[in-house]
Image 1: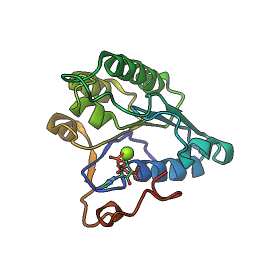
Image 2 (image 1 turned 90 degrees about the vertical axis):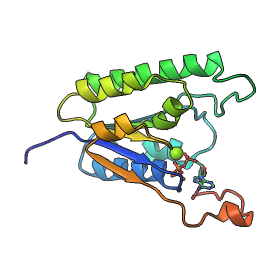
Image 3 (image 1 turned 30 degrees about the vertical axis):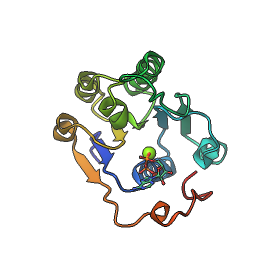
Image 4 (image 1 turned 90 degrees about the horizontal axis):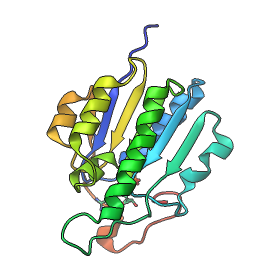
Length: 175
Ligand code: ATP
Ligand code: MG
């Protein structure tokens, strides 16, 4: 079978962008592939997926943010910008290393949208990635340039969300 690495985007306001990426990871690892998920903004809060490497051979996950964005100032906080640059560098190294079949940059679209990361860097990574590596980019408000450069783009559209009824985040569904 000929292998072609795809650039895959999960965007939109509906729930399911990160969890669909985790579904891809589950499927790829089941094929004996190696998958790294590098997470922008997220800190080491108790997401169930942080324990996945304990039971999913081939999977690793790196939450690299501080769990929140400092929204207090005029525009992005320098610390968040620095963390996003560091997170991107780690993700880029993994893509270029050849050690992974799939690399997921979780919330990268949102990091770009919020001004933490120049979109050019993401576009350059799409161009320079090894031909067999699948690159998965998640997060709301994916830039049109990123959508144009991708091979597979899915927009999650909200039809209903329990938050609208005041139902709090549920273990196993949200975290
Ligand atoms: P998930 O990680 O559950 O797949 P996501 O990656 O699509 O969600 P994010 O933008 O990363 O969504 O937001 C993460 C959190 O916000 C999740 O707890 C999710 O349930 C919640 N969320 C996502 N979409 C909505 C929505 N439309 N209304 C309210 N909360 C939402
Ligand atoms: Mg998400």
